[in-house]
Every structure is written in structure tokens, then in C-alpha cells.
Amino acid sequence: MHMPNRRKFFNRLVAGTGMALLTGCDKLSNSKWFTEVLSSGESLSKHAHHLIANRKSMAQEFSEKDLSPDFRSNGTALPNNAEYQVMANNAFEDWKLTVGGLVVHAQAFTMADLQALPSRTQITRHDCVEGWSAIGKWTGVPLHEVLSHVKPLKRARYVMFYCADPMAADGTKLYYESIDLDDAYHPQTMLAYQLNDKTLPIKNGAPIRLRVERQLGYKQAKYIMRIELVDTFDHIAGGKGGYWEDSGYEWYAGI
Amino acid sequence: MVTHIQKPGVIYRHTLPIRIMHWVNVICFFVLLMSGLNIFNAHPALNLGKSSYNGRPPVFELTAEATNSGELKGITNILGHKFDTSGLLGTTYTASGKAVARGFPYWMTLPSAQWLAMARHWHFFFAWLFVVNGCCYLLYSFMTRHIQRDMVPAKRDWASIGQSIKDHIRFKHAKDEEAKRYNVLQRLAYLTVIFILLPLIILMGWAMSPFLNSLLPGWVDIVGGRQSARTIHFIVAWLLVAFVFIHVFEVMITGLWNNIRSMITGYYSIDEHKEGN
Image (cartoon, rainbow over the protein chains, first blue to last red):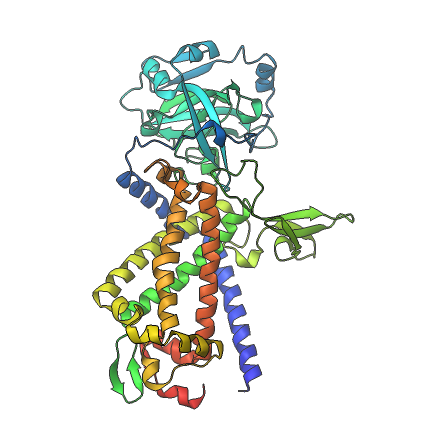
């Protein structure tokens, strides 16, 4: 073989193999069994994380000079939901947070009720799954304060957050999220009602949004309307514990 | 690099574990690189500092700008310098010839479509495989003294560094006895990759994990914060690509099939150099 021919053959071999592999990998991405194999990395990561770090390890807190000038709004900036918009127009005076499910005392909290509970302020970094980060100062009621009022039953394993923002254009598929009790009782996990010393803006999740530091942005549910304690979320929506989880994102978002 | 003499002119160069780990590494490298570029495409900008929104513009960004005619133009922005990279970076042409906004093109990413959730599954699964493979490699190579004997430059290697640089520039490669051992630049390249670049890219990956940040609050600030870590992760990935390019180039000019055979069967011919392959 002459050199140019050999080189041409080699180049074609490399390009051809590359395209075949790329197509093959795309086929694998769409197969159920392979996706399950790949997803096994998630539980490996979760267990490894919990092996090396304490479940109560604290997320880094920052100083005022680190604050992002404008805290980016991602996903929904104004829920396409008539009921929500009526409440928003009335400064959420009629909004009540119901906390129920597997609890001893189901309760509804007004904003005044929540603000009467002990509060916490923290400057933390919000890490979006897309790759960007923003730093904000959050003030809110630690979730454990709310839970101590409703008293979860022993059977309860997860806290579900049901939100007002529809993810489908026709106004359906309301956003929801879930966390386990370790995160629910973590000192930095809170229902935030203030951002950067001001009432939480609508674009960032008014009247309250979840802060579950040590996990990615899609866990930080905005526009929370209802909280429910459950022992399993298999029967809720897509069964994966959250809106984005139902579309293939990891339930454990510590990575 | 074990050199049992099988027949004159042929040496047993790579043991079975090394060969297996090499090819596992090849697979991991391509999957991690391409799924990494898909993840990058979800937010095709790199910043320095603790957050992306700190008043300073990105140091690197792939964007699409609309021209007067309404066409999209792909722009690569490096430290404020803009380059038109339409069709390759910033925009990609669809089958019908229409330009669409997209960081890296489909043939560089895994999956080829923009699919962040799936890219993350690929990336994290193969990251585990890569780290486990790397740990096995280190354990094996230290125990068999592969690192100490074949990679750490000996006195004579340091003495030959000037000559080795000259040889590389002239694409002149070792023959006979000298071809049995790694040359000094090769040794330094392998050591740099194994003990600097790979640990660094893994560490910068961990630095992006919000949970691992809580291991020791503030540790990520050593490199300037999470967004700096993301930028370093990206840069090291391309340094590794550069290494792979040089590695494959050297493999090709020093006897492509002989080298590939030695990484498949273990046997490497010293005589073959004379055939002018």
C-alpha cells in the first residue's frame, strides 16, 4: 500500500469507528438496562459521600462580599397558575402552608406563624446542575422547627414539597421535590422567606422556597404550597421523588 | 515494562494487567471527555471565583449571536477576545443547513444530542470506573516497581535530556537496546499525567460536588472557589487531550502496528525499527 492510501484508509477507519461508536452509545443511552447500569453510579456516590462525611456536615457559608449582585432566577420566574397569581397579588396574605401526611398533628402555617418561629440566616452558594453558581443570603425557618410542631410518625422517611409552578405549558405537571429525614433535620435546611434581607422575590420562589444546602439547585423547590411526610414516593407523579428526577436526573443531588 | 527475551529481537513489554488497564483507561478517557463536553454545553461558560455571578465576566464562553441577516454566528470568547467559530463552537449546522446555538458540536459529545441528565449518568459511572482502574494501576505499578524502574528518570536519563529533546523535535526515535526503555521525556510525560494532571482533574471534579464541599468547609477556596475548580477541570481535560494526541502521534511514528500489538499481546519487536516502518 502506498503511504497516501494507507493514511486515507487509516483516517476513514478512525472516522468510521468514531461514528459507529457514537451511534452505539446513543443506542445504549436509550436502552433501559444500560441506563440502569449507569445509574448505579448514583447510589455508589451517595454511599461513598456518606461514608466519608458526617450526615450533619455543614455547607460552606460565605461573607457579604461574596454575594451575587443579582440572584439568578432559573426555570420558572412567575408560575403560570391563576390561583398562585391571586395569592401573589395579595402579598400572600391568604397563603397557608399545610404540613401533613405521616405526622401526629397536621397543621397549617401562615407566614406570620412561620416568622414567629426561630429563624436562621445563612449566606450559601446555589449550584445549578447546569454548572453555574450564585451566592445568596437566605433567612427562613429551619425545617426541623416546623417538624417539631407536627411531630412526624416513626414510619415517615421522606419530606415531600408540592409547589405552585406548573412545568407543562398547559398548566399541569406541578413542580415537586423530596428529601430524606437526615437532610430535613440538618441545621441549614430551611424554608426561606427572605433573600438578601428582602422579602423573597417571586422570581426566586415567593412566598417560601426550600434551602437544602449540600445538594444541587433543582432540589431547592420554589413556590411551596404543601408539605407531606411519606414513607415512600413510588406512587407520587413519576415515582422518582421530584419533577426533574422523573425526567432522569438523580434523586441524590449531592454531586 | 518487563523484558523477558522470547526470541531475538522480540521483547515482552506490557504485562496482561497493564494491557487491560490501558484499554479500560482509553474507554474511560473518551467517555469522560465527551460526556463532560455535553455537561459543559448546559452552561457553556467558565468563570473564576466562588460563583458565576460575581461581577466579573466569564474567562471562556461559547455563544451564538444573531447577525443582521438573522443567521446565528458561533462565537468563542476567550478572555474577552471574540472569534467566529460558526459551525464548530457556539453554533452547529443541522442536517438542513440551519445554524443552531450549541457549545461543542454533536460529534464531540456523549450523548450526541444535548441531554444533560444522561451525560451526567455516563460521566459519573465512568468516573468511578476510571478512579478504580487508576487505583489498581497505581497499586500494581508500585508493587511490580513499574513506576520506580520504568518511569522515575535515572541519572543517565537526566543526563540525556538535552539529546532527548533534540531527538523528539527531529522525530528521531530510539533503536535496539535504547528502544527497550522509556526515554526521559516519555518518563516525565507519564509521571506528569499520572501524578499531577489526573489527581488534579479528579480533585476539581470533587470540588464541584456540593456535598463534598461540606467535607471541610472552605477547602474549595484553595483554588479560588467552585467556579475556578470548574475552569481548572476543563483546562486539565484539554491538557489530557493534548497528551493523548502526542501519545498517539509518537505511537504512529515509532511503529504503529508494533506498538499497538505490544499493547494487545504484550510483545514488542525491536528489530522492526530496521524495516523502516
